[in-house]
Image (cartoon, rainbow, N blue to C red; front, side, top):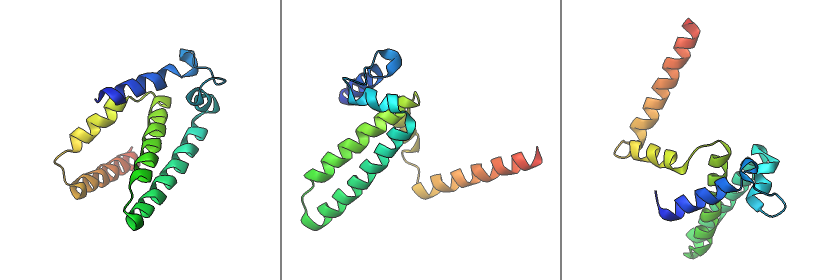
Length: 124
């Protein structure tokens, strides 16, 4: 995992209330105090802003706004992962698992797994 991502994940983890994070002094601790709905809402906002920045970049050719918004989206995604006690490395491992697998094949395999699970639950 990149050193920047590792350091950022460690800082975010330190902002959890159980680790001494103070909502009066830390934006991330404030998000954790508000709970997962607030974190998820923030991700939705950042995702929308990222899409809008991409559309602007498509028209103008200027990508700095897209980079800025994407950084915000990644940051808040890291907060969400920490909320659910998932390390960024877990996501990187999943990306590595998918490496070399066609997206079409991967999606079809997920559909097959869901169908199999559904059939198992019906027969149980």
